[in-house]
Length: 434
Image (cartoon, rainbow, N blue to C red):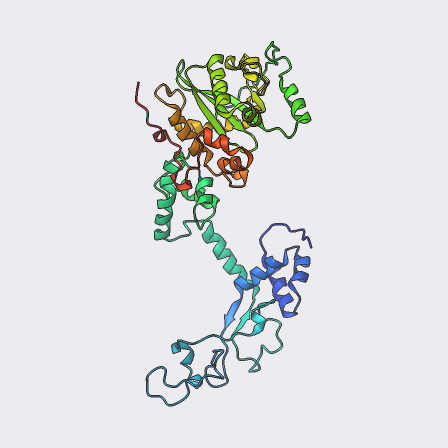
């Protein structure tokens, strides 16, 4: 049954109703209907805030042990006493085999003695539990107040948490990835709060995305049709995908380092967010074509066409010769190229967002001239091994293993990096200064 809950905390009035309902043996289900709360919410409230009252006999303390009737132990306290220990008021405190016997009513709903007809007098001498509205509300207010101030863990626990979090943040890992891939007792929001309060060796500014982004300029240009864009516009792309929904889509772009130096050709598979990057000597159409030819040579025409059937890119001059990319030197087709609208990078936004991981390792205006493809492969493997919330905490590499041919991963030198070893800082790639 669905309950139209308000998602608000229980008030003192709610708790008063629960206490009276328990006294009348009303079920949690009926309480839930009246309060518009899930019955399990009320059950948790009762179990958490019920008050214990020790059972007692008429003249002496009551033996609470579940084994009291069958027990014949004597002198367990080594005082020379000849009486059976079960008749002693100290029995429960010193016996190593003590097992408290509780009423079965406390093991199941309603978990309290509020509505029990035997709760008064000596009719029941067992330990009792009662739910009281006012003590419950006061306890709730105290816990709420403490949760909203200070640090809710010991100094040792905080120190141990810092030993996990700080080194990984320094490696460029996000709080989301750290929280998901490590056994951390607090929530992700709590980790951010502790970081904001400078409880760790690292601070908020050590996080990769803790920057103020510039306000985007409003695009005021309209798509300029060129010979290259003829039949390859974004509208053509949407129509083609509508007619061929089973084909995987690859987004393509370039990432510049220092002006005039080497650049990266990047590709991203939308279905897995797996990213590839290839080092180009310059930002020209011939350099891009060389990558395509090398990829087809390594994978073969059939596997290339199966892996990169549809490519969406921008209008950069390095992509101005689509026919050369779509067909190899023998005139055999290998892919289809489409272009985003000018100043509409959001149309391949998945790749644009993934570029920020590259910038953690290769900041803007950093020369790539001393990098090798092996360096770039190392960076890409670390990026593809990062767990993503958008992928239900899987990694792009994990999904690519399911969606791509195994030969593709092998021939492109893709491999998974263990979660604790992921590093997304400039130190990942050693570079000699020019």
